[in-house]
Amino acid sequence: MQNEEYETLDLPGVGELRARKGTSTLELAGAVKFWHDKYNSARLDGFIGGSAFSLLFSACCFGVYYLLR
Image (tube, rainbow, N blue to C red; front, side):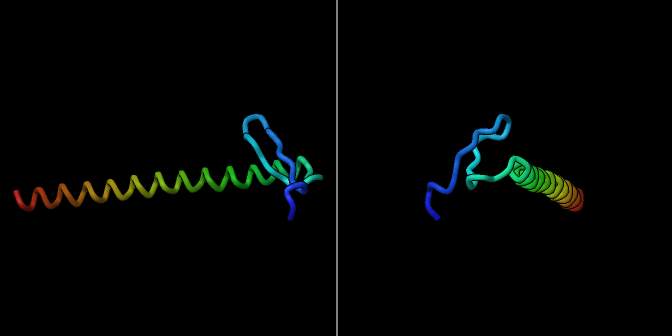
């Protein structure tokens, strides 16, 4: 595909998007929502996983500390 087939749109609150010429606003809104939801859920899953790991690691460290004390 050639570069002329795409246009750059600057959406407030979203940033710069590249889309094919003639892409409807509804399609762009759906794509932005999809990626927004995908990255927010990944960030939340990472936070929950990291918290669970740190709690488990802390529990193991305290257990070892009290066993060797």
